[in-house]
Length: 261
Length: 255
Image (cartoon, rainbow over all chains, first blue to last red; front, side, top):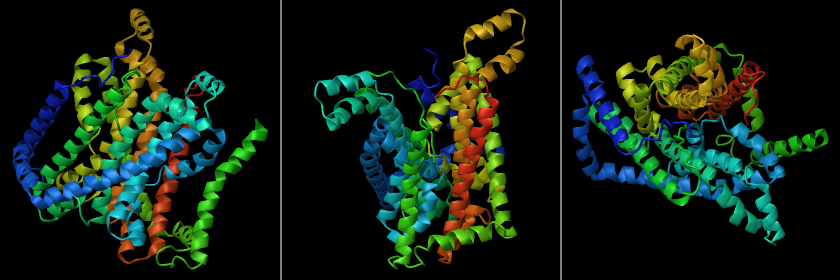
């Protein structure tokens, strides 16, 4: 087993956070530019921001949209990916379309989708849905493709129907890989959410960020960045816990989630 | 095999054709007004026209410059840190937790900070591209270099090869497939991020063209930059795959 870059847990990430904050504080003191307030001034804004009813409402609203888009994407993407992995024809049907969609910046669809669906929740949720679907489909596809054929043959011999086999054999066998996709999807959901709000500039976390920037409230800008960063880290951590609990039997996949909309 | 390959390509082109047909159908049946969904012919002829327009090409060149500047920085930092993290315990112990914390953070949230520190011009966009592309490259390099058979390095060192030479003649070539995979992912990410950054705040580049068109409700001109950047992403991806196949000629292919 090769040593993993990511196998450290618990204290070291906390130390890394403190180290990054110290580095930021130091850089702010050395360079002395108004665009980079020291870390402690930004952190002082955190309680005020988190106690502000409107800001909190905006954050909660963003997270709600993210959860809906993410959930809908899972409902569609996991079955599609699994079916692609088990049927050559289905894979051949979807692969070229997915390959074309892959390099499209999903959050960039925001202005066009807003023309059709308005500025409300529907367009933002749809963009998040699009952003999450692709990695989840891809990893479910890879997972289902790698399922041991013999298990499926024995199941068929024992009289399991195709749908039963998909749910009772392919899904559990592919689950570790599916979870890799879901983890990437979760990070992407957050990225797409923030990006689409930055582009649409209507409401939500991304909007607070750029409004504070326009009003030259630099401390708030940085405090908001810390909140979004923390949100990403915590969501990823929680999901990793959930994954470890659900697929404890599988080889640990210490893959750090990376991705972008 | 060949007999099977042709129907599969046909099958694969079916959804693409269906999407185009639906798009054409919606517009010609008058269900979607051209101001909301312009007919495909209008979009593609506008695209062809723009591709010969020096102003449009200038914006595309700006985008490409930012893309490659950011990507190059990401490759340099990612490969260097990845190799160092494998080669030295101290660096590994330092880089590991920092990467663990920063990788799931949405880098786009750092964009306002980059704007404040580096200004509204090229630098902030290049920094964002580099910040987003560096992680897949770093992780792939780390995974590639830590999977190199240690015996290869030991025997080279035993025969008197310097550590630096062992790095360039053994570790990096052996890790090349993984490094290049990371770079390809990083390249597509760069392509997407540069466009988004230009949409959020810019006065030039392809992303700016989309936002600019949307402010004046010129729908056709909103589709053109989006299609251009997607084609660019596809082309870069395909080009990089070709380069990878050429560089890796003779390597046993991993799936």
